[in-house]
Image (cartoon, rainbow, N blue to C red; front, side):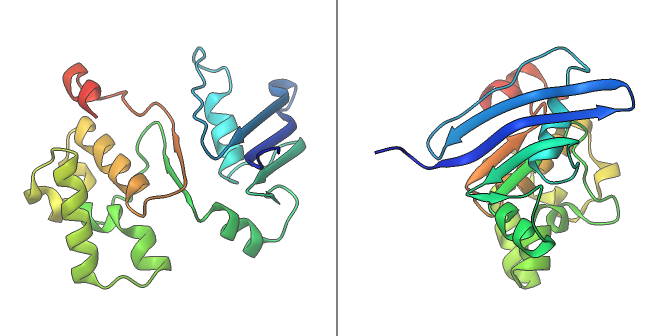
Length: 182
């Protein structure tokens, strides 16, 4: 019996003007698989991630997440398909107007109705697992080191225990010891 793929990418192509970034990429992952994409800077890794997250629409091809073609569907179905995905971007992409705990629990408070107390408790539990001090919960991203910002972004990605995690350079900006332990 064939296992249903969680992610199916077929003939994905992205270009910016005459610059071809992705050319007919095919990718199939089942629910129990992991994949690491390695390549030099500028080779399209982040562009692929943005397509998989529905942030960037490809020129050609399809992307199915749990059977839903997120390229060719309505906004509601696309958002539902992407609900079980956590992501970190190269630069962390934290909201600079929100505190650390608000960044970590953004999805839970905005979309799942967590109250402030429950959200703060969840954020505290996660940052302690990532060996961050509880005193950072009320700080803003600009008050954190680059490595701490990266770990807060990882905390946000794993907060709701998503089915799929996308990490774009998750250990860049972390010291070697911290990167090895996380």
